[in-house]
Length: 244
Length: 309
Image (tube, rainbow over all chains, first blue to last red; front, side, top):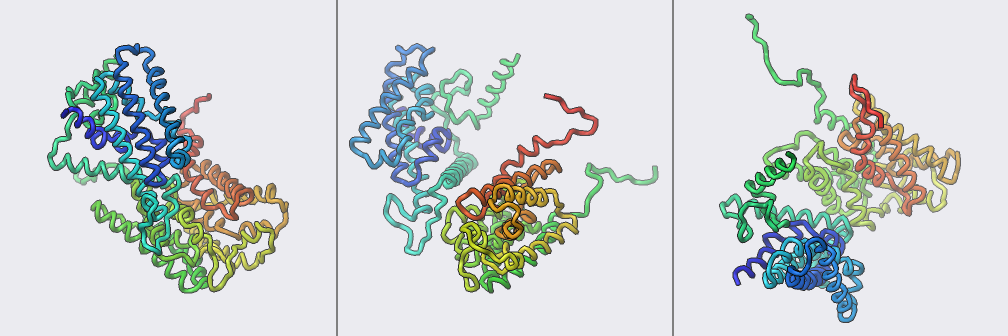
């Protein structure tokens, strides 16, 4: 049980797909024009991510590793199609707002990344929770970006007017450049929090079972790689060996 | 060995030209255009200028204070603020002018590493930020003295313009762009002091004229050409913003390529674009291409034979 909760925490905070792993930038930048669109996109992706992780994990002993990527894509595409048809039937407005980015969930690298780095080498229940955690982390990030952009760019939040009467919306925030501004500022802010946590002596927890042996570790999306000195050393040593 | 030799690391030859000296010269060169803008548009223009300069300087000061590396004394924030103000319409709400100043200094300049590291002209970056954010306010040139439409907009709509007024500056527009004469006086000061040369502005304006003659639809009509030259931000952009040391190429050949590119882009925006004006977008797009231009036009070092192929 602790392991499952750790997966949720890992996906939402520690290895947040948007702010830490910086994956899936295309939908992040394109659809977050409002908090509602961001939340809708995030939850849709969560469903696909959780289901595909579950199925891939269940089939991991059946899928030969040589053809695993096409197999993953088939599984993911199946769920995306299901979700798209469901959205068209029950939430046509949201489907219209998200447009082509719903079918494009198939190529969202978070989903393929988690299938490759987690679901293919772990059992079903942790994989399911990993998918849910990552999906919720993605939803959280997209909703946050969408909320900031909507607030500044339109003066509303979830389509309710919150800014005072005389507020002049800063249009640029609901256009493409605004997405980059908001993403950059939020990422910088969470890095600042992380650096401060590290400076105050709180040890940044490693993923469960991390042995600093990144070269043979399946967690290709592991964020420790980037600030773990031992891991970095191990990495450069392997590179040197490869060069030889 | 009775004499003591001073041992130091290079550089051993130092120029007396300082950053703040150059910035001071640019401020002085901008004064004619600034003064004319205040004379032309009234006291409100002065307030817009003061608010914009105050916001850029204050942003630079606060950031330097927080980072404990004060950079305020190089005067570059004053130049940015002044240039931005000269690019704003006189009727703009003051808080927008201040927001533009903060954006110019904080986002375009300081977050990319401060003076010398910015990849586009901060004043123009902020102008485009404001133009996209508040299109209604940024293109509303109506004020006490003028009814609204800029000469270029009139020209684009097929109307007649008074070229004499455009050269003097008695027309609608942003605070600092209207008077060709005031800008040329300032440009002459910079050229005489050796701060800028004619490579960028010269190639820019010549290319623009050729483009207008070829594609403007009026052929060699001198009235049309001079109206296009005197109208909009062309003069201000060519002499004061395209020549920004940080965001133009360093290679002499590259500067000419840069100017030609700006001339073509400005012509394309003015002739084929939906709006009447395109100097600021042309210059910031040019700024983004500077690393490429420099790479292509890098001169061969002395004694090095350039590899073919």
